[in-house]
Length: 528
Ligand code: FAD
Ligand code: SIN
Image (cartoon, rainbow, N blue to C red):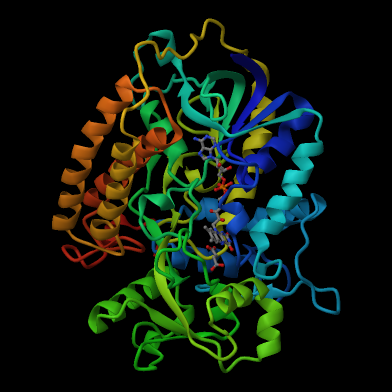
């Protein structure tokens, strides 16, 4: 099957849907997504979206907080651009139907999270992402130019390689003509041809055993672009959220928003100590890299599997009203957050690196854009400031849409693209070999590529991954494709990049901490 569109959007989170809505008045748009429309990280976002709204906050403070969190590796030009464009994009979200909580005087109720010097997080209770996702999903469904393909798994983007031409990495003339996608309901492989393609496939949390990310986050877009010889960077910086609910066996791990600490909750160890003050004067509200590492250290020192979040000193009714989702989740497990300590543990949460893009969301491959968590824009540097991710997604989707609308006239649909050829392949005899390798990848990353790294751990990870890589490539070459097999392959490709870039960074900075190089190398920083 072949279908032709002006714009192909891969991914239905905030980045993908907002891009689709911004280009849809100018052409036919396909949105393909591997789950249901709302199966996204976006739907899970709790805390909110950062933007300067009222004094005493101002752009300079938001810029400074982002740069400090990024630990010397943000691109200051991109930080300033995103922070200044935030208020306009918030207005756009509201126009699409998102509601942010307000005070009785009509002003927005702003929350605070780690690393923020002011209250600046716009939110909808403790389920902001779901609110945004619902609003955008409704808007795309009613737009006459947007066609939604749920349960379509993008396998690879189409480039000159598929026309039989040799394509080299960093070659500036690589072009994207669309993507091959597996229709998960029929098993058929569909060719989507497009004049412009947007990759908005989100993050890679599932490479770790313990993650806040839903199952869709397997690094597919990054792997596709890497295989197509596009540029991917900054992959060593994987963010662990300090406070996911300790509930062994639950996947994804349920997040306890940082906004709860912004509301006054305090981290405590098993002795009841407010241990964060020993690590950073900002205490429980220090940036995430510092808090996650401190918790890791406390757990290793005590041998315990979790620490606690203490809300018992806060007003109970206010807590229930502000964090209804967290209250009812904890209650369902017998924890009353107004009276009991909440057991928490760090979990893989966000990838700061990804597909390299410029300030217009253009990747190194022509006719291909990337936005959202899959993209490396320069905003986050070595560590993302809380609630800057939804912001990055919507700002870059907007910029990419403007750029694509200007450039699309010079692109035609590429003819003579071959259909996917899977002759000679068969269904894998033992699916268990795929699922077992999937679990092994998660173990490798959890044991060896976690919050604290070392040369030995990274080498061990690379050696183990290589074995699984070879087994999986062999299987891939002879098998009919399945979602699990493709995801495993993508996790291996993305994981390889994480380990390789971690090995190349011979210092400790932001989210990358290694016992072999415990200090920063000042000459690596972009700013003081
Ligand atoms: P996503 O929303 O993850 O969407 C990715 C889409 O791509 C999905 O539709 C998926 O199905 C699709 N896809 C992936 N691979 C393929 C493929 N091969 N073929 C077809 N489709 C594919 N950030 C904040 O700023 N504030 C917060 O409060 C916040 N809270 C968070 C809480 C949790 C629990 C989590 C997990 C994350 C949170 N984040 C938060 C991070 C933020 O939610 C994400 O970074 C952001 O939503 C990413 O949006 P996105 O559009 O890039 O990707
Ligand atoms: C949270 O609510 O703590 C998550 C915020 C984020 O990841 O930006």
